[in-house]
Length: 236
Image 1: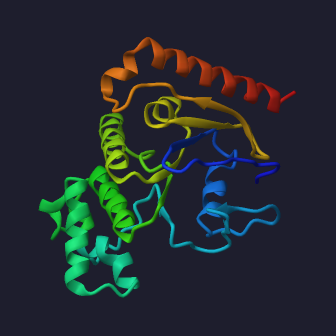
Image 2: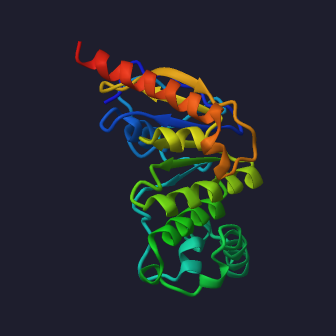
């Protein structure tokens, strides 16, 4: 449930939405993607109202949502096929984005033959191939082990830097939000609303070493303080 939710996303930025479980992060993303209708208020993209699935928006779920009967290449081609793109162009586009996520050599494999991290990279490639201007990611690495998660975070930053997309990334991890984002919007407990926004002034491009820097640690403490205060407020 959302109430009094107000957030502006800047073109080309990487915005993380951070908050505790049940605060409405995924609800916001679902409404933004046009999958869940809002009961009040308005959502606009470039001044255009969003009330259904929108060509400019592409959503990556936590659970991969790949078709098990289709190869990796055919999964990535799905959105292009729906758009009526011809076979040769579909194949070319699918291979371009599989190369981007480092999975071209696995194009003829099926999802069950891949690790969880590889499946999530296929899901990202599929959304990118569809050509959205805005990527929406709903805790896409939440089910992965720490090492795989951090590796994919690094890859996602590289993809974002190359593609110049706008990214809205939902997470409950403070470290993930700080490592990835330009800004972090922090939500309090339900009914969900944005209670604080933290600017992330870390150098780009980023690598794993930034996680141990004094600036990163200070930002983590700042975000933690916001979340801790908001949690306490919920029980006052």
